[in-house]
Image (cartoon, rainbow, N blue to C red; front, top):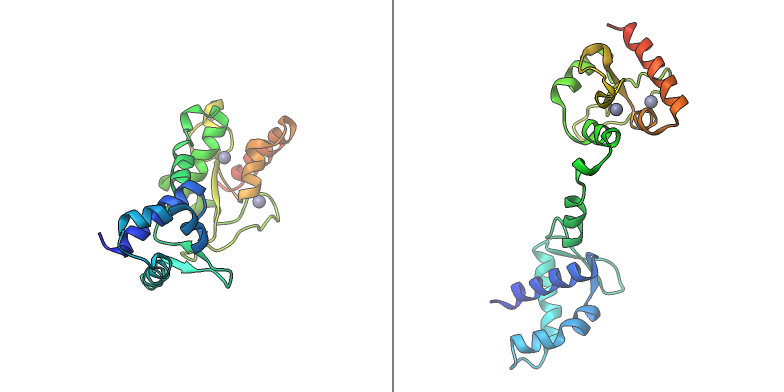
Length: 196
Ligand SMILES: [Zn+2]
Ligand SMILES: [Zn+2]
């Protein structure tokens, strides 16, 4: 194995251990000096070698130089081990039905409903004069589709029960106190009935 690949491997291991993509040469040396010495016992200039290889890794876009304090950031890895665990730990089946419904509505694409809802309601949150949105990367305004009466509470997957909300009001619909939730339901049913 080449020095560059070996050092890169050690950096990834180091970042996985610390749970941070940012590291310094000093940290790497402190933790891995004996590993590098074992890799090439004949090399008497380990630190200089690593400095040189960090430049190569930087040229390859695998790490970047952060500032004048000698810190680098690992760029060539999408997810650290700890982050992979975090994503794997989102287990929809363990959430309450209410929370699961919100997570699915918000994070799992429901192409059919998004299209229908936007055709009818446009991109405006149904809370009057809300106007809270932003442009997504593709230039389309951001909006979330919401079932007014949650499916887990017997709501239907039909047009009368469908609405569009900004992210804030969507959370309000799901996570506010009982009285507010009832008020939101009434308001949305009225707004939707006037449009379909
Ligand atoms: Zn919802
Ligand atoms: Zn809103």
